Image 1 (cartoon, rainbow, N blue to C red):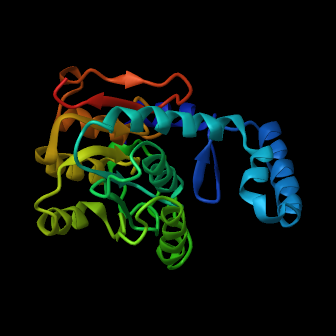
Image 2: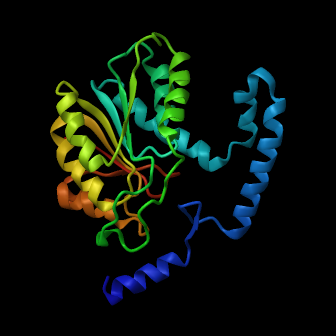
Length: 266
């Protein structure tokens, strides 16, 4: 990292903190309020009874609701596009759970809309100089063998929609730079209707983007979670090197600051 990059990194880092291996820009006051809300949610949960999932919305924060609205907006755009959904960068699986439920809302009988989630579940496997000096190997890790817990959670989500006897999701554990090759080989039929890049860092984003492009069709969505983000510059750099920023009509959702998407072939 040269002197200019180091200066930019120090300036940007001033607004960042890391909690449990994840970056946050929450103020100290917001972090206190967040802990208070967690305490209240944890205390109330055992008392909600059979409708616990519904009643638990009382502690849903605006930021989380924004995320749900964002993916609702994206999902509606692919209802008429054939193919699977691939999310690269799953972590705890919140987006996968949303996608499974959105499929149950908008196209409950489309059992060809399989959803694939790729993650190491052990955090970033590699960090490049092009990632700006913020991230470390192992950031955004989960729990040991967490993919087994997530498998159970997603199976339950899928059971609430029609034709649950047909499994319509799959978790792919490992470094996506490597697992993408076997996935492409094992799924020669797969058209990708929506691909979500949420790996944050440069190398796996570039590797997957290069390899998955031939599986997109006109109308497929390319979705990026940290585009134009000073804390994760690697994602933007990967996109620029593989496709070129001026070759896409990037779109933005007003309530997700660093999220962007493009319609392939648009």
